[in-house]
Image 1 (spheres, rainbow, N blue to C red):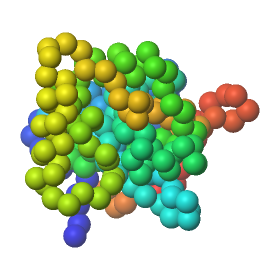
Image 2: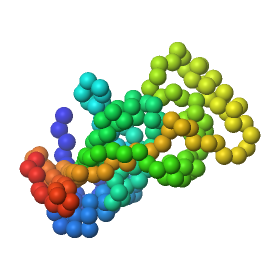
Image 3: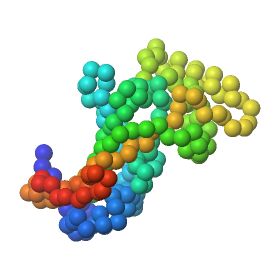
Image 4: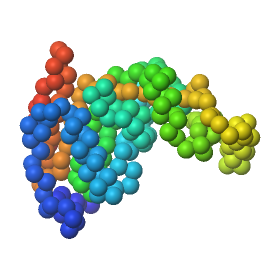
Length: 216
C-alpha cells in the first residue's frame, strides 16, 4: 500500500511548509497544541487520541489508545483507573511513551518521559467535568479484569446508578485518577514524498532543551 503525502484534500495546502527547528523556538507545547487544534479544525475523529506505551512485569511492551486531557509545559495529562493494567504497569515502571497520529494531515508527535500521578485537586477538577454516566461507569467497571458477560457489566452500571441515585455529586473513586508524563523527549514528524520525512526532536539535556533534526 502506498500513500502520497501532501495530497490530502481541497481544503488543505498541497504541502505543509517544511517543519523547521525554529518552529520550536517557543517550546514544544505551543507547536503540539497547534497541531492538535489543526486536527480539530480538520474535523478528525478523536483529535486528542494518543497511543500510550508501557511495559509489563516481564518487560513486554503494551499499548492502548487513551485521550489526552492536558498538554502544557508540565507535560501530557490523561486519566484512568489506577487498578487497570496500565495503572499497575505505570506504578511498577513509571515511564511511558505516547504517540499522537493524524494520518490525513501526515503528522505525528511522540512524547517520552517519566510518569507521576496527578494531585487530588487536578483529579477532582477533571472528574467534576465528566458526564454523570461516565462517572458511574468508573465506579461500575473493574477495568482490565475478566467478566462473564455484557449483561454482568450492564448490571454493575445499574447498581452504581442505584447507589448514587440521589441527585448530587458522585465522589471520585479511590482507584481512579490522572497521570502526567513529564517529557524528556518530544519528536514532531511530518510526512514528505519519497519517504524523505521531516523529523524534529527536542530533548532535555542537563536541564536545557536542545532541538535537532533527525534523518527519516
